[in-house]
Length: 165
Image 1 (cartoon, rainbow, N blue to C red):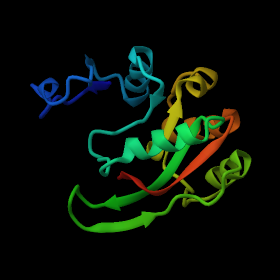
Image 2 (cartoon, rainbow, N blue to C red):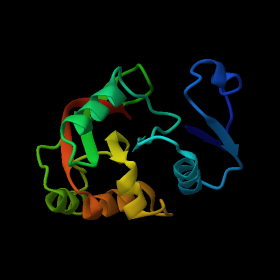
Image 3 (tube, helix red, strand yellow):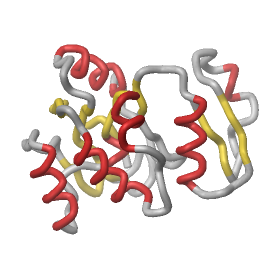
Image 4 (spheres, rainbow, N blue to C red):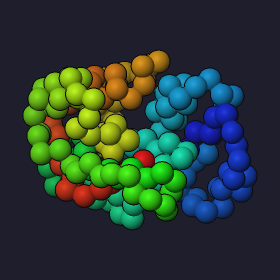
């Protein structure tokens, strides 16, 4: 599922690249409205967020889905991420996968530190968790991450960068 909002540069004809991806366009009402539209339209079991200016490394989704499949009682997969100045250019930094699985501890670390223990876009969420947490709101990633940690049934860690920010 790809929800296009605002700028539609480089997306015309994108449908031809992968028939498994459903493209939905809507007027620019901001990121929360686009995420909520994606959740409303999604047909699959898992949800991952990818902003237009970010990238996924090879096998990112496969690694996270595989980790959740192995640990079937978990509904959240979290991995590390890398920060670039522009895609394919200088690496500014890398945040490894957090070593903490306890959602209450992760919530505490996330809300009390300028250096978050994970990036929301490095998470893969099971549909059941999204149903419990509810809609993305105006506070976006940080608030939604905390709400996910409050409602998760379990976390599995993927010891690899799964997101390029």
